[in-house]
Length: 165
Image 1 (cartoon, rainbow, N blue to C red):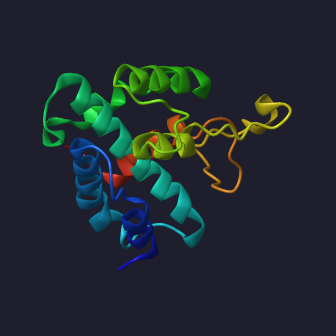
Image 2: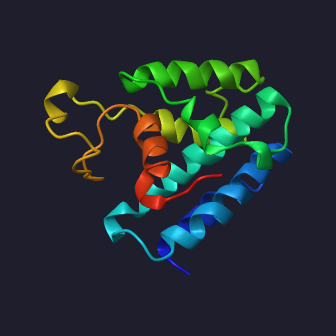
């Protein structure tokens, strides 16, 4: 097994709503075969964060539509990506969680606990100065700026992984 897959399994929830656990199971099934042999050791945590974004996105869509997680597709996840600053995505995902009766700040909520990882703002004093080279051209997982959610989900859905479901 690879470090990425091991870390994904460690982060997977042991409690919480059934669809939340199903979303993690499906995410691991989809990405473990790909990420088992790809990536650099410095990318491990970012790939686990990307898996978290996929699982959370699947959960939000499945809950909103009252469908099984298996019926959520990559096109559905792309609807959760906004153009512009990551703070707009944070507001969108926060709102969706609240509509599903999750308090994003509730430390006892297993869904919200994972969301807090993705919404953390890593911005410095002037975030614009860090965007000299877009992540799509050169990604450096050691220099996170702004909320993680957008970059993580973009990474998981990137064409390089050839993942369509």
